[in-house]
Amino acid sequence: MDKFEELTVPHLGTLYRQAYYLAGNRDDAEDMVQDTYVKARRSFHTLKDSAKCKPWLNSILYRIFIDEYRRKKHYVELTDVPAQEPEDDDSRWPEGVTAEGIKTALESLDPKYRLPLVAHYLSGQSYQEIADTMEIPLGTVMSRIHRAKRTVKKEFARHSRPSLGVIHGGRHGM
Image 1 (cartoon, rainbow, N blue to C red):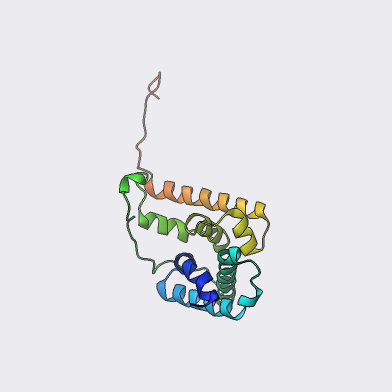
Image 2: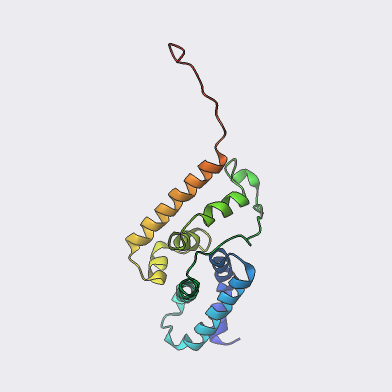
């Protein structure tokens, strides 16, 4: 195994998960990861600090996603994402939260908000790593993640809110 493989292969799973949530389907995600590795191999000599390999790969993946997004001029659809229930104990999930609900909530996000949210919560990147990857200020990353979380919460509330009848009560029965 050469130095490139030694540094990059451990990040393959994380890159694939991020690509999958960005692209919305397996084929496009695999293509994005493959393109990332081809570009990374070509420019490996530019990586100065091996400790920054993961953010460097994420940066390449992000640029590939953005280039594809601009080329297609449309939002990424997540219709091909299979609804998978969490593998771990379901009791850790709030009541009413399902994989389908998460998918729907992510679909409602503009990609500029989806990417930082996915990068932080699903790929485990720090806000600073996301800022470096996306080449935007740290405050912008923070505000985009905040807006994305707010949108996701609204989406969950909209889809999981129980229908309530009119409740009459109070002191005067009104």
